[in-house]
Length: 201
Length: 201
DNA sequence: GTCTATAATCCGATAGAC
DNA sequence: GTCTATCGGATTATAGAC
Image (cartoon, rainbow over all chains, first blue to last red; front, side, top):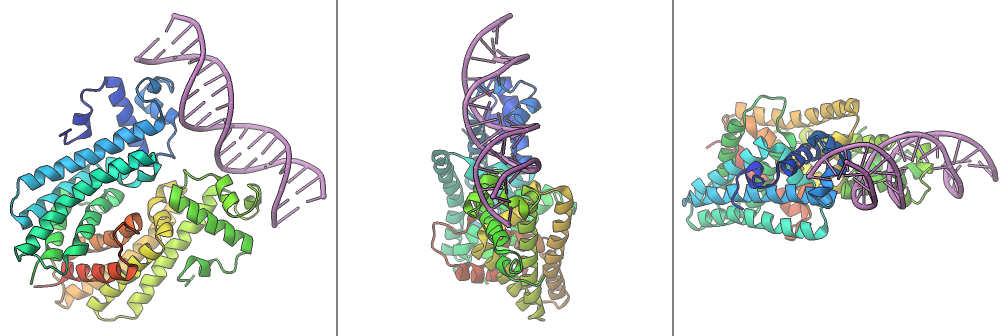
């Protein structure tokens, strides 16, 4: 529940189930959910197509487990970043660093989390939208506090939450690019850009 | 070649081919390429599954036509925005307005263009990456000119190109949201945020 | 150029032996 | 709990009549 990686979150599952989830994570991230067959997942995990149905009732249940855990891991990282930084500007910086790091270093997972939403059952979609909204609320509150304290520009605030979320999420789409930038370089530069968007003048 | 909408680009095709492409565009944008069957596309276009093979040799050929035209339309809008604004800051504003408007008002097309890249044949992928790179070059050049003129911050410039592209592209993922914002409101706010990221202080 | 019918293959999921 | 074998249906694409 407070895991900061999917491996951590799945540590108590049977090793076979873990291999299955990691295989599906890679395949779904590379080829998309509908572009991946259950046979491909089973092959990657080193088991027969039938064996996976001992651990998951349907293909969608595998996607749900990956997407939910991914949302929870991202949420937990942002929550922790907030807890460590009372100052609004420092907190925004920490949130951007947490989200950019997640979507860069775990971009395959990030793609499943952000781009396979429509492939989930609608009840699962609604649940995960809830997590996403609570994650976004951390950023919105930090920005609102900064505006109240006079360090952020009030006019920029309303769209800045969406814009900063977009910056971080879209990293999963293009990372890694041809230009050799480390995750740390992107993270630091994006935190600066986010604060430039918000800074009062 | 200089069309600013896909309908314009496809105006000279037989009406049946146009209906087919529009049906596929909607279906691919809503359900994804691999999540859509050729039968569904044919049904939406009001023809039999076999009839589409008179106009396109494969399902991938339909995706390629949509993705290529989408890339060209976006490129043409950005090119025109640049041609109309010699001043670097005004040009950046115009580029952001063009790209955000495109990805908001044509978000279904935007999703196919930006998120179905991996579903294309690799030769087609390479071709479309070329168009994408040329579109991004317009923004990079505007930013470089602004830095040279002293109106943009040199330190912010390298990652700002990627960041601003991300802001615009990611609109296709979340637009329209629950919060009622018009395309024009988002466009204006994002242009402001982009210039705040770049402004020298 | 559109249709009906179908080929050839692949899909998600299950049955039953071990 | 894993395997082989397979069910029932959907998939992309084609054949052949009109």
